[in-house]
Image (cartoon, rainbow, N blue to C red; front, side, top):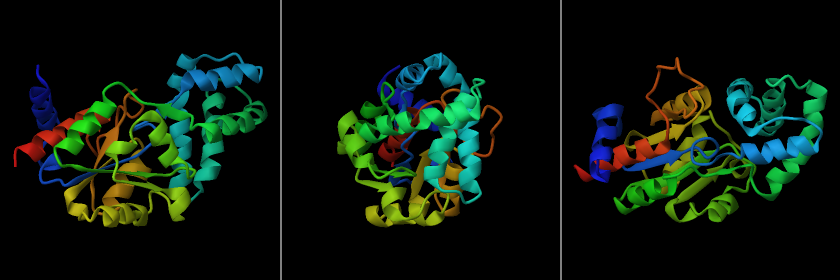
Length: 250
């Protein structure tokens, strides 16, 4: 199947109404565009005396995602959630809380040097390039630590993004609708003509909908297999190509 055929198939699967009439796609960063480097985390854990594998960390990540999401939904801070994420991740593998917390400083030093969510899946850069070439406006809205611009430059995605709205600079975080509104204002796009793509149901999907955007959940490992409140896809590539197909068919 050719690229255009795949785009049309994606548009059909997601539903014409979801991708019709869009001017912009806003994207989460971690676990949407860039993914946790499980190999690097496993290596840091082994240096700290734990015997874990990247595959085990990958399988356990659903626990960490849910703990992080619950904290933010309850009004907690992203910085607190960052540490909680890794404590929950190792806890799901049977590591005690004190032992897991002892690993956090080394993980954070590595993250501050180069974001641990730095793995770009195959096809993502090409899909962003196709969307930009088709005239789709692209931006990021993410709860992060203030270094996303440097990360996207390092991994080769910066050239496709018109704006990067990072909670550390904004003083507001998802799921607050305000952070989505700021991104829309910077692009000059109405909420009704924008789609948000993220990996957490409450923080991303409900947060974006609260600001008037349409939303899609990215779930490559099936962590939310029973989720049915929004379209659920394995990759942002499928969403971008569906939007391109609808955009070109206007």
